[in-house]
Image (cartoon, rainbow, N blue to C red; front, side):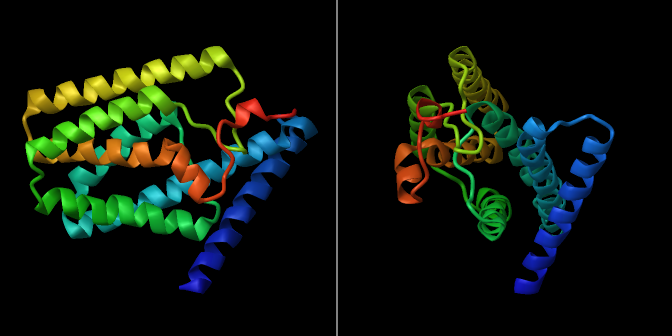
Length: 208
């Protein structure tokens, strides 16, 4: 198991470094942009590899449609609301598998009472209103206007998800929306940042 994680890091570093060297060689990236491009390439590699593994597992567990829907809805919401990131690749893998593999099984085999669904909807909306978007030290959100825009889009997406769930009236979809709102609430909550000793509202202390 440890060897697989190490190989994963080795492959990721090989991909990122070779891609950076190619971009620098062809003048697509200068010294000041290296960190930005490195972060983007690492994120892209992690996204592709984790998505492939999760979808393959979902196929064998017969939760493919649920997992795919979760991935799409949560990825779009997180793209505007942001939130905490795992500090190590191993932790990120663990959280990803727990979220999309175990989470999909819970959604498929358990029916959540509507009272719980409503609580998740309301608390998720309030959390996004209060804390979204939540940045990270690696990606501080410096532009005030962009922060406001991201908050508005986060709230708008949440309303769309909620309205779609009522329109579809599907237990699975109710559960999916509730699950991703709980997850995003945890990811943007200041207490979560404090628990893992990660700075919050990094745009306030950023020195570029």
